[in-house]
Image 1 (tube, rainbow, N blue to C red):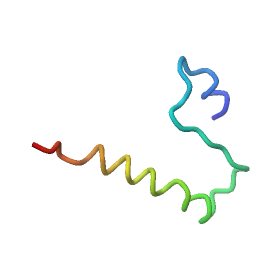
Image 2: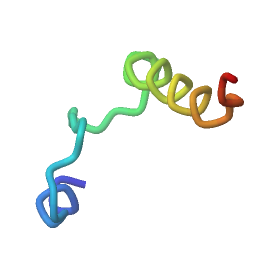
Image 3: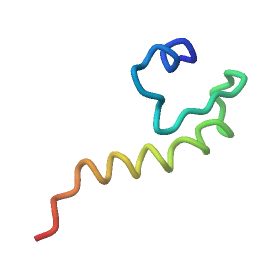
Length: 47
């Protein structure tokens, strides 16, 4: 992932890396932002 981020034409808006454990502590840090992104993408535009 770090190599991919370096290869992008522009830097990522948000990028963070940890030591690779996908345990509850890890998921607890990424799920809120992921759900917020999905919620915003799936919400109908306000009139």
